[in-house]
Length: 308
Ligand code: FDA
Image (cartoon, rainbow, N blue to C red; front, side, top):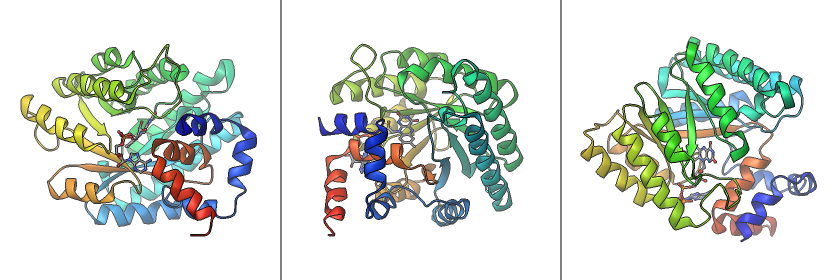
């Protein structure tokens, strides 16, 4: 219930201004966000890759309403990818892109603008030997995101996408995207979605996740298992055995600052474990979704406000 309220509030400008204006918010945000600048992101990349982790980096922002801001976000990725190129990490570092941050929400021309910006980013990623993965936003954007993915893949076949298990449509999308060379990050889903399109009950979401995971693990693509859920990780291992996938033929992904002990344990067991690193000053929507996922995070936030 509180989670749903937070997700609803995450899209209300007045609430955004109120939360962003609280002086102690920044300290709490730092638990989930690597910092504001490219330099901050690069420092986190150093720290995590030195510890054996792979990374995917997200320049924070979403639902951009003007074309100039969309182009600036694409430029920020290009600068970041220039820095990654110097580090020579190859596919141990990649970027995650929200298409609404690069123009998708700009009305009739939105898809065209987002596609062009996505292609610029993919070109820079190729120069750095890195991949690009498109995040998935609310259900109204799925067709557009998959259309842009298809177009980008014509020139950059390694471009990947996140699919959300809570959407009824996702089993079919997993089937469509389980072909050779296809990179799919499977996540539970983090937006407030209506009952007409998505499972509402946590158990149902978990069961849908397993069905989708099975399709991806049985398929010919490269599954990226985006979860912090121990049960789903152990089911992934069972499916890897069943479908003869060895280490390196799928990977785990988790969010920056969440279950870091488990991240290290998976690295220790020989897995590719990729950490999603968000950076930038437009942290509000991302932060609210992380609060909504877990009541303990709300308590942490409230304690910080109280100065503890
Ligand atoms: P679940 O929420 O059941 O959590 C399992 C356990 O993980 C919890 O018991 C807790 O220990 C820990 N945990 C989970 N969330 C936590 C939090 N916020 N703080 C502290 N502990 C937490 N969603 C989306 O809609 N579109 C997208 O593109 C992406 N992209 C994405 C990339 C990556 C790499 C990850 C890992 C996740 C996403 N997500 C996403 C978010 C995803 O949809 C989902 O909301 C979260 O991953 C939480 O779901 P879990 O699978 O971790 O399970």
